[in-house]
Image (tube, rainbow, N blue to C red; front, side):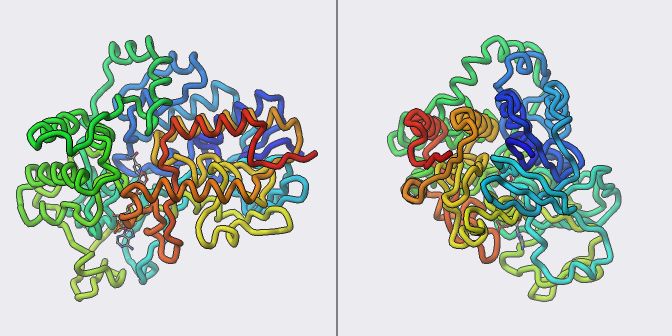
Amino acid sequence: MFDAIIVGAGLSGLYALHRLRGLGLRVKVFEAGDGVGGTWHWNRYPGARCDVESVDYSYSFSPELEQEWIWTERYPGQPEILAYLDHVADRFDLRRDIQLGTRVRAARFEGRWHVTTEAGEQASARYLVMATGCLSVPKPVEVDGLASFGGEWYHTGRWPHEGVDFTGRRVGVVGTGSSGIQSIPIIAEQAGHLTVFQRTPNFSLPAFNRPLAPETLRAVKAAYGERRRLARETHSGIPAEPAVQSAHEVDPDERRARYQAGWERGSLVGILGAYTDLLIDRAANDTAAEFVRSKIRELVEDPAKADLLSPRDHPFGTKRPCLDSGYFETFNRDDVTLVDVRADPIAQITPKGLRTAAGAEYELDTLVFATGFDAMTGALTAVDLRGADGRSLRRTWEAGPRAYLGLAVAGFPNLFTVTGPGSPSVLSNMVVSIEQHVDWIADCLAFLDGRTIEATAEAQQAWTAHVAEVGAATLYPTADSWYMGANVPGKPRVFMPYAGGVALYRQLCEEVAAKDYEGFTITR
Ligand code: N01
C-alpha cells in the first residue's frame, strides 16, 4: 500500500521520487532495467551522446548537486550521464524505494491504482505517475527473416552492457536518425567494412564537442541561477537569445553569414534559432535547409554520395536534427558503403545478410538496427492501463493521444504522465520539461491531500484542439517523423508534442494550478 507508484527510474522517475518523498508520501518506483537511468541505461551504443550541453542537460532542483558535479565534456556521453544519474540516486538516497528488474504489465483504477508487474507481483497506490519516457520502446525489426540471420544483431536502444566488438566484421547499419548518425562514424573505425542502409537522409550539424574547461564550468556555476531562468524563458529550454527577425528580412549574404555562425556554434539552436520563421514558413526554412545541404556538399567528396545524403523530403528541423562528430566525413572512407533503401527497399533478412527488392545481396556478419522508437505513446500504451469503468488507454488513444496539458487523461483519475503527449517534451530540453512536470505534479498532490483528481473531457478536448492548432501553424506536420507517429506502421498520424514552447506552456500550467486546478474534477 503506497501513496504513489512511479513507473520508471530515468530522469523523470528519479526526480519524481525525490519530490514526492519530500511531501511525506510513501512512494515506490518500479523500473524494468537492472539499473537506474532510463534512456541512458538502455542506449549504450557507440557514440551515444546528448545533443544538449551537459550544463543545461542536468537537474536544477538542487544547488548543491549543481555545484558539486563536474561535467567533463561540452556534450555529455552516455557513460557520463549514467554516472551522473547513479550519483543522484545515491546522493538523495533514492535506491531504497526503487525496485529494479521489474516491468509493470498492467494497472487498473478502482479508487486506487492496482499495479501488476510482469512477474505477477501486485501493489497499489492512490496515485500513479508514469515516468516511462518518450523514446523508450524500440520499434520491432520490420523486415522478414531476422530469425534466419546467421550473424549477430542489435538495436541501438537495447545495447548490450558489455559492448560489441566490430573488429574486422562486415557490419550493416539500418537507419540514419540520431542513433545511426552518432554510431556510424565509430562503427566505421572498428569494422572491416560498414554498409549504411539509408531510407531517408537527415539534417545533421557538427557538435564540435570538446572537453569542458574547468574555468568554463566555474563560470557557468557562478551564474547558474540566471542560466536556468533564461532556459525556462525560452521556447526550447536551451538558454539562447530569441530570434527577432524573419529570414526574409535580411539579404542572402547576411543570412549565410548568420547560418555559418550558427554552424560553427555546434548547437541544435544555432541555425534553427536564427530567425523567427524557420519552422513556420517553407521559403524561410528552405534558406537554412539549402545552407546545410551546401555544407554536406563541402564535407562529402563524391558529389553523388553528397546528393544521396542531402535531405530534401522534409523541411529542416521538422524531423529532429542531429548533432554529429564526423558523420558526413565517414562516407569519404573506402570501407564505408552507402545504400539507398528508399530507391530499392530492404526486402528480406537472409542467413548471410540482407536482400533488397531488386535482388541486391549484402553479406554481413553484424546487423545494427538504429530504426528508432514507438515514440511518446509507446511506453504508455505498452502497459495495460485501465481507468474508471475499466476503460483501456490503448483503446482510448486508438485515433491518437488525447490528454489534458499532456499531464493527465480524462477517464483515468489520479494518473499523471510526465512529459506526455500534448506537452513540449521532445521539442525541448527534456530535463527542463521533466522538472516542470514533476514540480507541477508534486504541488498538485500536496493540494489534493489524498483527494481524487481527474481531467474533464471538456478541458481535455480544448487542450487537444489547441495542441493540434499550434502544431498545424508550423511545418512539423509536413514531415513523416516520429513526432507525427509516421515511423510506426499503422500508428495514427497526429502531431503529438505541444509546439507552444516551454515558457508559454509553463505559464499555462501555472494558471491552471492557480485556479485550483481548472479543467479537473476533484473529489473526496
Ligand atoms: O530513431 P529515428 P533514432 N527500413 O526514428 C530508419 C533521440 N535521440 O533512434 O526516416 C529502413 O530518428 C528511419 O528511416 P525513415 C532524438 O530525439 C537523441 O535515431 O523512417 N529504415 C530513420 O532513418 C531522436 O530523434 C540522441 O525513412 C528504417 C531511422 O531508421 C530520437 O531519439 C541520440 C526502417 C530511425 O531514426 C530517435 O532517434 C539518439 C525500416 N523498416 C536518439 N525503420 C541525442 O541526444 C526505420 N528506419 C543526440
